[in-house]
Image (cartoon, rainbow, N blue to C red; front, side):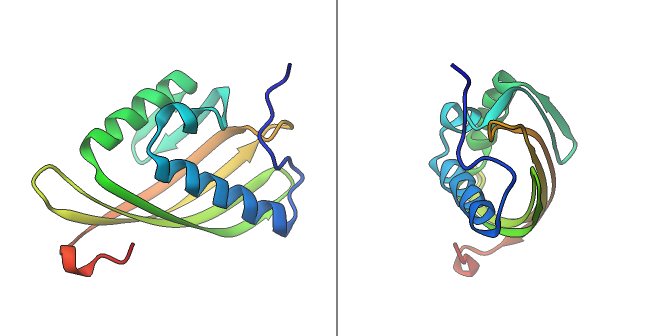
Length: 137
């Protein structure tokens, strides 16, 4: 049986917003296994200065991410969409082991296969140190 992750492309405004919300919910679960199922087996990522290829590397990457980025909370927003592509802007907050809080801002470009699995993810992200009192998420 072929894996599918609804909604499928070609995206409409409604289905693009739904896809973004599903991604936000999955990432906020901080469950690398669950998240990886939204990507093709041979998915390609660029995340900051790292290149990640395939689901197993996604799981490893996310596991290490949340070992460093504690109490992670993410908000995504649809920026644009067409056909099988979606662009989002996002921000997330976390703290490190020393208790320093950060807010990360960024943009992602996503490309999906015909089954709604993400085959490419390109993320540009910047971190800003914040005080705990300045948290928004």
